[in-house]
Image (cartoon, rainbow, N blue to C red):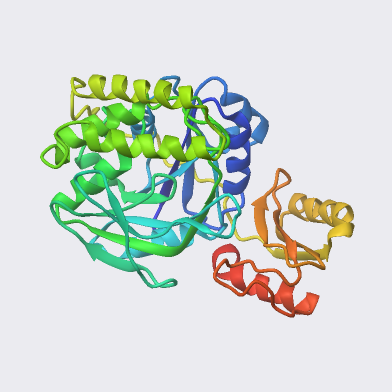
Length: 404
């Protein structure tokens, strides 16, 4: 079993970090350590988690995700370094699946699938990335890992909230480029690995749920508060990889403009907000054209590996009608306190779409209509008995949530 160092960066989001740490505490992978790189605000969540003695804590107040990840990497003692955002929660078998491809010595990196806010649909699956910053989706096997070796000008995309890299490979290339304070930081790593002919594994069953928590850069509805760092990182990225394709800001600026217009049409922005935000993009682009490239630290020896108590837990299934939710949630929360991983299914006699969330009690709670669909490609209505519907949903999550 490969030893894994999991790095979480948190800046100003203690509530999100608390939930992330609760999810990490349910991992079934005994050869891991957890490293949290956090500002003073997020330190509150670490103190409240009860995990202070079993995680490595790195104080870091600078709002630069690449520099923060490098600070975590400097303390990583595992063979593999995995990354997850503070507003994401892993399924309990996340590391079991994500680390497995590294048993092949040719594999340098791996990336898993990311589920979005409804906990059912995928936000990101498999993609390729290119020197102009664009990505395209690709089809891969939905269960087995797919190993891909790209090359200069084309990279296998891994998502910063669900990726892993062999530590020695990441350290050898200088870690993350700190010129990317936010945005395109992991895509830069992907292209640098591709230039070396590295092999990347896409691992569908290594899944995390990503919530897009609000931050200084975006609201809870994903509307940007500022585009400064996006503009700056695009300028840096194109200077490094693809300036020939986009020598000016015209194309990326137009793409951001269209994004803002969609928010305006949906009623989330006023016309004046669109132009104000575009000005922050322009200012970021101008700054990014002069920002020094390839800002990499020197890595020394990390602190000794600090084994995290991530061991196998029993899986408890709770199900109830929606009007029985209060009592069912109490039972589920108690089972979590007793040391179980709990899947709670709350069904209504309707055709409502299903949603799944990891709640503050540490319960995987899925709710929706008995006759409604969970997977979005399914028919709108299917005649289920309640017990059969629960059994089907349990089977759907088993491969990522628990070992039978």
